Length: 307
Image (cartoon, rainbow, N blue to C red):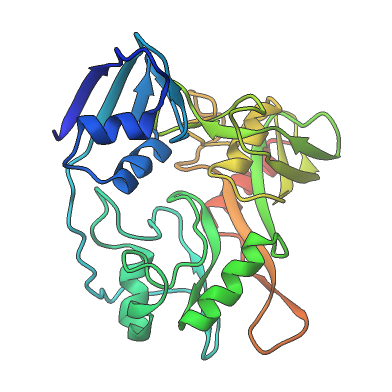
């Protein structure tokens, strides 16, 4: 059943899509099918759905793209890490752009997890077995601060802060154009793009998840702006989508930005440069910062030289 599978729903009664697929693809568990739905691998009448409870009606066509299951091996790799802070409970790492956080299809080596396993082997049994120690994530081409827990107590403690939105994350971004105000708040729901399973999109409140980003202009140029952005929610590609929603996408963003280069850059100009969080055993928040990476500093210099 690996690959694209098509079914037509012919029953007269309505039925949840996950229940229907269990009956048609018995080799996959219901939880596995629900995961495929969540990850945009299921379409109904050529529209991607994201909810397992989607109700089918007679005549609908269901398409399921079942990927090959790839066994991911976690072998420690001696890759240099830029460690901003470390104690017995966690690592705070300044991730370079181009590095994937954890193993996935197409990225079986060279990830942050592989590097962290070599530096701190004890994270092997922390959290998820396929991405041990990973508390939160950054896109491959986004640089900046990321936390990794060294034990399960810290993993749970930090994840709870992300869940209740008490973690304050600040990103630096170079964007095309300028936002409508010097300070602002973007409220636009985000969900899976109905036409492209690997992309996210701004969609209706009924289908998307509430998403909020605050921003502040740092420096303005003729055709570009440097902004600070604080995501108040943690949706996939949130800042990139919200900036594009304002009509000023992040420079170098190949998915949501302009096709033609507006600056000589080779990745999206987005850097997670500050995080404020409470550490285990403490009753106050700490703030950690990562320096601006060289490629972003060069882009800023380009802009200042054009003034």
